Image (cartoon, rainbow, N blue to C red):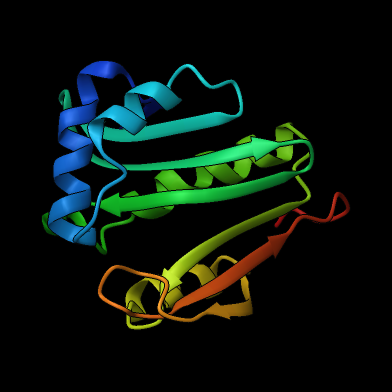
Length: 151
């Protein structure tokens, strides 16, 4: 199969909200995502196969900082490298745009996510107590880019 990574378009928003609600159990919502498409410091990417959106990632990128908002891959396509392929686009964007720090929150119960971020050289820097709607804590993780390395 051939997967394509591209910027999110308005036609993708309903699918993205479905993926968020199904796999993350909460969503940024159609209205917010559509509004943020016009925000110059927000970037959203999708990964697709034959025009079917299978995952997405989005974040804020301002000055030298980036923050991942949401990142989700359709359950049937997890653990097949799609998440890494999508995430690599964010890393490439950060490196090309002089982003020094990239942060994110991940549910402390999301072992797959935590392991993925550790594998991608993130470190835990904080805990946000009762952060999610279900009262679960969030681990705050950060990756620092060093211009002398290719991480």
